[in-house]
Length: 143
Image (cartoon, rainbow, N blue to C red; front, side, top):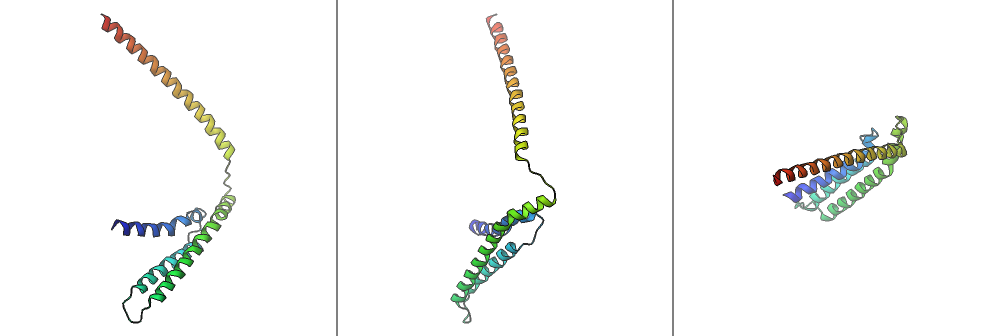
């Protein structure tokens, strides 16, 4: 039962995850998604046709359907992999999204240094409090 669920999750994931970059760019129904969906349906039909016990069914035809489905799904995967990057770049260019890696790294580095200094100051303060507590405990123990 778990294996069957994982199989369906893998199929659904392969249909959806490869299109996330296109979806980011606002393209929800892509050729790649369509090819993968048709490929999955064709593979399912081929599997069903291969196990058909009717006299009209042929396992060779079922195997051919499975092969065509695999090719269609592979073509959809290749298409989405090839077009996702350019779709995201076009979207960013059209929406004037500027990605400045250097500035983000510099701001992040300065912020990290400040946080480290604050944490270090808190640690020094905490160590001082612990020393005072030990000193006070030593005075009360010697009385």
